[in-house]
Structures are given as C-alpha cells and as structure tokens.
Length: 403
Image (cartoon, rainbow, N blue to C red):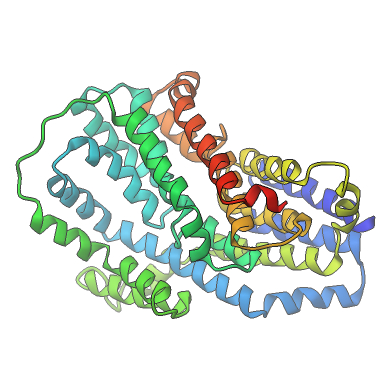
C-alpha cells in the first residue's frame, strides 16, 4: 500500500512542478525520487537508479532522442525546411494539397515549435484560397498531427514502444488505418469545400529535390525498418547525410556552436526521467494493490482507456503523457503486446491532440487570432470520425476483448 501512496504523491509532485513551468525531465526525476522514498527508502533501492541509468534501454533511448532533436535543429537552422516548402509548392499541382502538406511536413520533421513555424506559410496559402482564421488554424493543427500515430521518429511513439518493450513498427502498422482515417477526415472537413484551379507547372524536378531533402530521414527508416540496423546508428548516418547536404553552411569552425545549440539537454533529461520512473515502478511493484482492487469490480478497459486519454488531455504534451501514463497503466494490463501498446498510445494521443492546453492549439489560435469555441466547433466532426474509427478498429481486431 505504501507503494500506491508513493505513486499518488509522485504524481502530485509531478503535476505541481509541471504547472510551475519546471522542465519535464527534472519534474519527472523529482517525482521518481518521491516514489522511491515513499515506496522503498533503502540503500538497495538507491542502487536501482544507478542500474537503470546504465541499462542498454536507457542509454539507447537517450541517444536516439538526442539525435532526433539534433536532426530537427539542423533542418530548421540550415534553411532546408524553407527549401522543402518552396519545392512543394511547385511539385504539388493542387493548392489544397499544398496547404495540407505544409503542416504535415513540419509534423514529419523532428522539430519543436513546428506549429508556429508552419503558421505563416498556412496564412499565406490560406489568404490565396480565401480561408478565415479558424479554418487556417484547423488545417495547421489537424494535418500536423496526422503522422503521430505511425511515425517511427515521433518522440511520443518512441517512448511508447520503449516503455512497453514492443516493436515500434508493429505499433505503427496497427495504427495505419487510423492514420488513413485522420487524413480522410481532414480532407473532408478541412479541404472539401475549397475550390481551386490546378497548377500547370512541371514539378518533376522539384519532386526529386523533395526526395533529396528528405533523404536523411528516408535512409534512417529504411536502414532500421528493412535491415534491422539499430535506430541510434541509423540516426547517426542520417546526421552525416544531413551535414553533407549542408556542408557549405557547416564546417569545423562553427561545429562547436552547432553541437551546443542542436543537442537538447531537456530532451535528454526527459528520456532519462521516463526510464527512471518506469524502472522504479516496476521494481517496487507499487501498483499491485490497485490491480487487486480493480480486478472483478471495474471494467479494466474503461479504467485504462479513460486514464490514457486523461493523461494526454491534462498534460497537453505527448511525450510527457506517454512517459507518465505508460509506466502506471501497463502494469494494470493482463498482457502487453503491440495491440495493447498501440491502443494505449492512441487514446493518450487523442487526449493530447484535443487538449486546450496543447501548445500547438494555443500557439495556432494566437497566431491566427481565432476563437477557441469556433475552432472546436469546426473540429468536432473530424474528432468524432476519428474516435469512432478507433473504437471500430479495436472492435474489429479484437483488441477490446483482450482487457
């Protein structure tokens, strides 16, 4: 029972620190300390922290997260993202596809603050199409997050697969129909009534340039997904390719400054904090009393799915919601496989995507001077379609009956 109390206290401390704008990694490490002291305040338990820190999974996750953050920084700092958008406008003949692709590209490229970076480009395209601020905000928000359920370089999905101990590509494949519905819903409710004329430019050359600009990410995914090379090594190769593509900008003289700005200590602390929190919960068996209490009294599927959604909704930050929620919810499951991990991730992501404290929503609405109520009214139909598709898919695949 002390362990369960420790979890409650840890979550309380985590909530207070996050609401006080403390970095998520530091907040999570602090919550881990509270959990440890409340559950098993002994010298042996302190050694757990050392063991967890030097485990392969912790080191691998930290390296992967650092490299992903670095790739995102170089893409933005080098101006390669701007080149991609210019090439896109010529390569894609339908302006509706352009305005949908802009936020999707920023969601695909691993960079923080992508919603605010894509907003001016959406604004420009939207003006030419005669769209109001709410419509632009919806498109910027909806298509930016389309990839999150399947993209192997998404930090949230990486955290989910690492904590659950399942293959990230299995989760991505399971979520593929939901990704398709996300795109379809966006096309119907966001692009359907926009009328445009087709562009007549030959975009073949620009399309090939798009492939060239995405080559670092494409190579990383092929080497990891097809040939099974460890993701950390694949991302290192991606960094080398990206640096070679921008060799005129980066040389030995500015390399120290590039490393200083491109390596995120915050992401590193978050990765370590997540693995520490997960490891301590596993070792203390802190949630066993809760499991015993729930068994036979409350439908487990209801508890887990509502809790996963709540974590995403309240935290408004996908990696944080996964990092906190997965270690707490996974021990409640009767079994853990890619279907269960994918289900937890989908509901966590759903809560995060619609959360009013979600930074992408806040920044997008602020940029376009759009009213939040009108924004959610426009988004309601697409959200209902997405939620319905998730429940239908879980029913068809039998995942709902695994709980």
